[in-house]
Length: 485
Image (cartoon, rainbow, N blue to C red; front, side):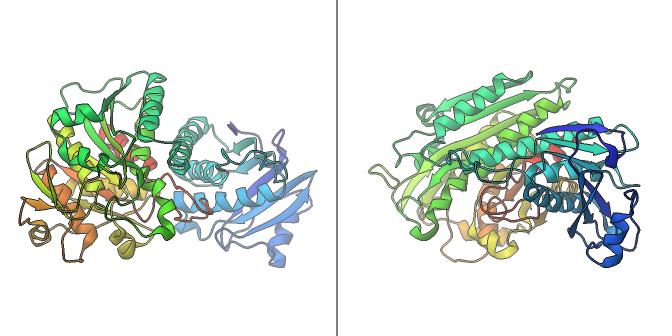
C-alpha cells in the first residue's frame, strides 16, 4: 500500500474511489457533497458521531464513508487508529483500491499519524501459508491518501514506517516454529541489519554462550535439536553522543515453548510460537530507529531458543550458573524465559548498556491481572518507569506499573541454590518473574514489560482477529526517540 499526502480536497482527490470523512459528536460534517448526502446521513441517524460507527453514501462516482470520531475533546491518536480501523474494514468490504482520508479539522499531527497507523495495521493479513487465499476475497487496498490543508508528508512517512515495522514483527511472530527457528531469526536480523546504515548484527552460537558462562540461557536450549542463538544488534545513530552508554533493549525470543520437562497442557500449546514476540518487537524497533535515523546509541540483545523436552533437557531440580555467577535451581522448566533474559541482562550490563528495557511474554499471571489491555511494567527506577509509561500512552501501547518489593524477592530464595526460577507459592507470579530479573539487573536502571496478555489475540478495532499484534514496536521507538531528545 502506498501512502501519500495531498492538499487537494478529499472529495476531489485524484484517483480515490472511496473517501473517508470523520464527524465528531454534536458537530456537523466539515465538507459535504454537492447534494448534501453526508448531512442527510447524519440527520436520518444512519450516520452518527459515536466513535467507530460507519455509514456509506455515494457522490460523484465515489463512495464516501462517514465515520464517527466521538467527542472532540476526547479525540487522540488511539481514537484515530480506532476510527481508521473501522474505515479500513468497511473499505475492504466495498472493494476499495484507493482510499482518501480527509484529515479532521483542528487536530494535531499525532492524530493524523494515527489514521495512517490504524489503516495499515487493520489492512494486515498473514497469508504466507495460504496460497490462493485472496482469490475470492475482497481486493487489497493499494493506495492511501491523506488530505490536509497543510503538507503532512513527513508525518505520514513516519507513521507508515512505524506501522510497517509493527506488521513485520507480526509476520515474525505469526510464522510457525518449524520455519522461524532460532537460527532463522538470527539470519533475519543479520539481513535486516545489512540493509541499514549504522546498524550491525552479531550472532553468538550456543557453544559460544556456554563458553561465556551463560549457563541459564544454555540450560533452556539443551533439550532442543535446534541450537540457541544470541542476537546482538548495535545501532549508532547519526549525531549520537559517543560518550553516553547505549540504551539496552532486550527481547525474549523462545521460538517455541513446550514447557520442557514441565510440559504445558496441549490445548493451546500451538500458541507458543508467539513466545518470541518480545524479541521480534526489539528487532523491528531497532530497525525502525535506524530507518528514522534517531540520534541515539542502542544495544539490542535477543535471546533466541526453543524450550523442548528432548533427551538432553534440563530436569526439574537441576542447578545452573548464570553469567554473573548466580546459581539457580530450575524447579520448573516452563519458567524458562526469565533464565534466557537473566543472562541477556548480564551480557547487556557487561557491554555497558544503560538503561535497560526488556520485553517478554513472561507470565500467565500478568494476563490474569491486566488482561489484554495493558502490558505489565515493573522497574527499579521511577524516572525510567515514568518514561516507559509515557511512551505507552503516546504510542497507544499501554502499560500499567506493578510493584517490586523485597518480600516478593524473598519468594525466590533457594534451598539448594541461591535462587529458584519459580516460587513454590503461586502468588504474584508476574511480579515474582520480574523480581527474578531484578536480581540480575541490580542497581542498573531497568524496566521489564511483560507482554503475555498483549502480544497476540489482543483484539483492537485496528487489530482484528487472531494472531500477533506486534506490541512493543511503537512503544520502544517512542521511548528511544524521547531519550534521544
